[in-house]
Length: 215
Ligand code: GAR
Image 1 (tube, rainbow, N blue to C red):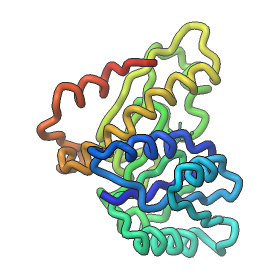
Image 2 (cartoon, rainbow, N blue to C red; image 1 turned 90 degrees about the horizontal axis):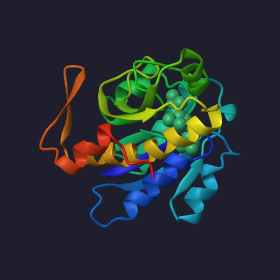
Image 3 (tube, helix red, strand yellow; image 1 turned 30 degrees about the vertical axis):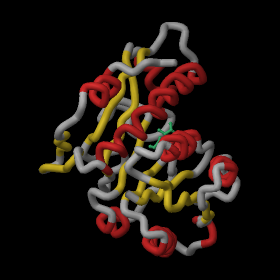
Image 4 (tube, protein in one colour; image 1 turned 180 degrees about the vertical axis):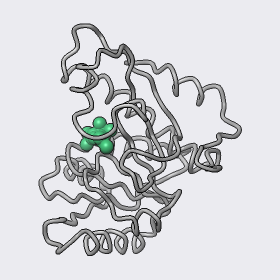
C-alpha cells in the first residue's frame, strides 16, 4: 500500500514509519512525505533515508481550499492510497477529508476521546490521570475524532514533566503507528459503522496494542 505521510515538525513518527517500511515483509511503502512547514526537522529525516519529500507551504496559499487542493493533487500524483498524518498540525477542509474518507489516518498522543487538541501532555499532567497513551484513528471532519484502529496505554509517573511524558508517549507512538498501518494495509482493520473491526489479528499484533514494552 502506498503511503503519503503528512507532517509539520520534528518528524519522529515519520522516522518510525520509514524504519517500518524498510522491512521487506511490511505491507506498505512511503510514496511521498509532505510538510506544510519548510523548517520542519522531519524533512532531513526523509532526505537522509532517501524518501521523496516535498514542502507545500500553506503560507503560500490564499486559503485552506487552495492549499488542500495542492495537497490532494500531489498525493494523487504520487499514487498514494493511504494518507498518514504524523504530527500534521493543519486543519483540513471537509472536501479533503471526504475525498480521503477511510483512507486517512491520524496519530494523537492521548487515549482518545480524552485530551483532544493541543498541549495534550500539559493537560494530562494537570488532570492527575494515571494512565495516558496514544491513538491511531481514521480522520473525520472534527479534529481528533474518527474510528479508532489502535490504542496504546502509557503510565503517567508521579514525577513526570511534560518532557519525560512526551518522550515516553513517543516511544509508544512509534510502535503503534506502524502496527496500525499494517492492520489497515493487510485489510484486517475495516470501518463498520463508525467503529473499526479488526479481523484475524494475531496474538503478537494484539498484545502491544494494550501493553507496550517501553524500551
Ligand atoms: C506526536 O506526538 C503526534 O501524536 C502529535 O504530534 C506529535 C508529532 O511528533 N499529533 C497531534 O497532536 C495531532 N493532533 P513527531 O513530529 O515527532 O512525529
